[in-house]
Image (cartoon, rainbow, N blue to C red; front, top):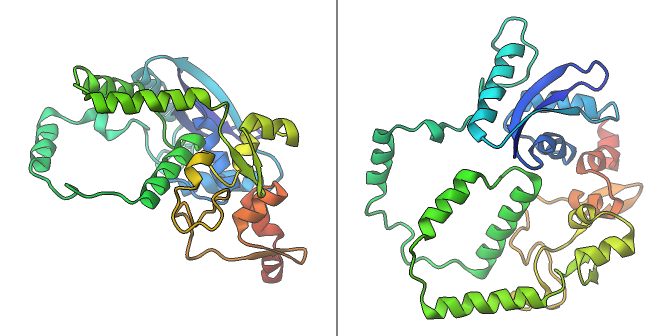
Length: 293
């Protein structure tokens, strides 16, 4: 199910952004800015952060639902044209930069597709290249985070493309056995192990019940997204039962410690998990930020 949504000022109920989405896309803009990250539209982000500074979130109003993605794009374009964009239209009120969120690839001509296809023929850049376990973990975690936050979404077009790709595909007996074994392992596991502040829980549901918080919040606080049995496969780990950002290949060279009320935390993200507040609020409450003011 696709929808068209509007972001509004809480006090005046005036729309400042129109978008099309699916799943948690409508909440993505506010979530990113609460964590201190920018989106592709900083003009819109500045408005969202001005609202967040007042202690409230922008209002989200879902104005249209449909099963057809193209119809949703059409409705989004109509609303953008109706309200107008501040930067481009006279008396416009929206912070939208584009007059449509429709991806360009939906409008590629046959000639352009043929041109790209010919360009890729004979491309052997990654032929024979093998990814390390660290690269696979980092890539998997990056995709998981993008789908979890709504930045990346599985569309009907992607599902149809996957179905066409695998239709009639011949799978070897060895691959079938691997798939069968993997399915049995998933069925045997009651849940995915999760580690929060160094304490391991058998599943997200168990952690949610013990800590008295939602499953979504447990995921945000979690130190890992990998099954326990896979942790021992990480090379160079002194403790197979624990997993760190460095083991997942996610260590940032620019990571700096932060001090809040005299207590030093490893990083802004670590402080955010422990104190259960957004990274943006961590920055504002830090002693370093207070000194600058």
